[in-house]
Image (cartoon, rainbow, N blue to C red):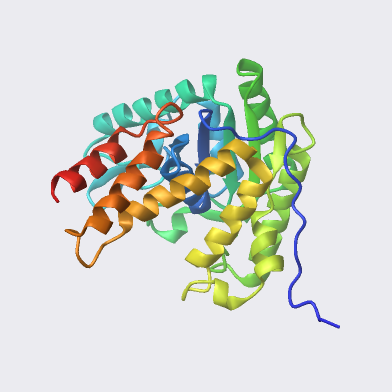
Length: 321
């Protein structure tokens, strides 16, 4: 009898599927960043983490709420102006420029959310730091004594997210939400604290996913229960390896994508592989035929996605022969 060597997670497909051509917004932790970039690579119309990495649900809810900017929360870091509600990616040389930059990003996000089909939210941690009694998205390397550290309560996370997501879906009824807990371990505060934090986030996702048009994808469970091995973590023992990310990505495709989109992703992967190919002798007839065949495959998708950049690349390669 063959002994089972791992626990497979049976991931159900969502009742609604992501389709090629739909608009997607990703917000949250660095895992949201990685998933969004993969979607972009496969030609999905995706706005990826425009506010930078944000780990906790309260800060995410505040950003989605699009409240007036609190200029008292500006802070200087490394000679640049930042804001406690945003990641260091959102920075400028002075407060005036930062106000303009934030306004542009907020306008971009609200514009996308008015017509987006999907919002992907990845929660990283329920552990937060407060400055003057308010949760910050980023401490910006300020002295530790300025902040009070605590664990968010389940109720406050649920109320904040229920309110803002309900408002977004009221203004855009076709908007669906995918919720997930980041598989990245936040062990700087301790293993037990990380487990408590992830548990609270998982409860939040369960509460939210009871609503129509909201779905949970178990990226955290895939990492810790399905893969469940340190060889799937990078040397920092915190972040998933490229192999683990690929495994989780394929699980996501199974749960969230329709068949047409999954077929396109397979075909586009071949196109990207062809573009990354480096022949020993590019002057051969065989390589020219390889380029022509790859370009022909690309042409088949011209009416589906924008392939101008890739088509021009193949033309350039053929011209150089």
